[in-house]
Amino acid sequence: MIATFLFSNDQTKRMYITINFKMDEFECHDGTPVPYQLEENVRLVAENLQVLRDYLNKPVHVLSGYRTKSYNSHLKGASPKSQHMLGKAADIVVHGIPPWKIADMIEELIRKGKMMEGGVGRYDNFTHYDVRGHRARWDLT
Image (tube, rainbow, N blue to C red; front, side, top):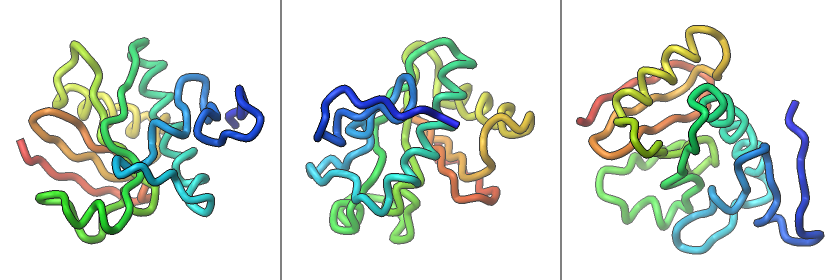
């Protein structure tokens, strides 16, 4: 169980949802905050990414978290059923570690039962991880 730390009384955006991840890291790039009803999904993603961060002992940068349906529809190659629209996904990078290696590490942590089973996507410049609850894999490198 992860404690929630509030560093600003009324600003959910500044709320730490794990020791290293804040809610605003997952908001849509169009400026839309994570809807209240999806915050638990985002927390689950962040908790799993915290496991990865602790394993690596390096910051994990969220490139894309929650997406509105409208924003998602304008992204080339984005699935119309994207887990991002449910707040269940993040595209990530770890500086100094290639995306394929991050995907391998996530796979290892899933096998060990330390991260939740879900989607792992391999891309040239980032790694996708989601908490859909069942195995899904793809490689677009």
